[in-house]
Length: 160
Image 1 (cartoon, helix red, strand yellow):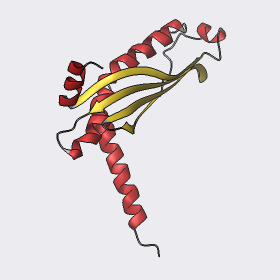
Image 2: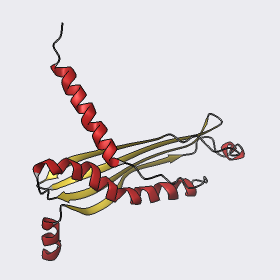
Image 3: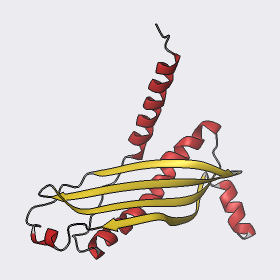
Image 4: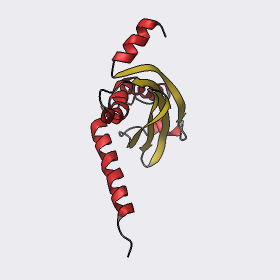
C-alpha cells in the first residue's frame, strides 16, 4: 500500500482492502430433467449470514455466507453456496462503532459484488439469473444483538 493509500485508510471509518470468493459451490442435481419441469417459478429459500473476525490491528475479515436451495415441483433445481469474503480496515470514531462497521457497513458495501456473482452463476448454470433483493443488514444486526441478549439473560437466570 502506498503512503497516500495508507493515509486514506487511516482516516476513513471503513476501507475495503480486498474482496474474494472464499468458497463457491453450485449443483444442478436434477439436470437435465429439471429443465423440462421449469414451467412454474421455483421456490427459492435463501439463507444469509454475516461474520467478522479480527486479523491484526484494525484489519478484519468480513464474510457473507449465502445458501440457496431452489426447488421446482418439490425437487431440487439447484443448490448454491457462496462464502464471499472481504478484507477490511476500520477506524471507528468510537469503540462502540466497530461492530456496526463490520456487520452492517462492510456487508452493505460487499453485497452488490456477491449479488452479481450469484446472478452470473445461476445464469451460467442454465437457470434464470437469481437477482437477490437488497438485504437489510441493520435488521440482521439488531436480530443478532437481541439473540445475544436473550442468550445472556438465559445464562444468568437462576436454575431452580
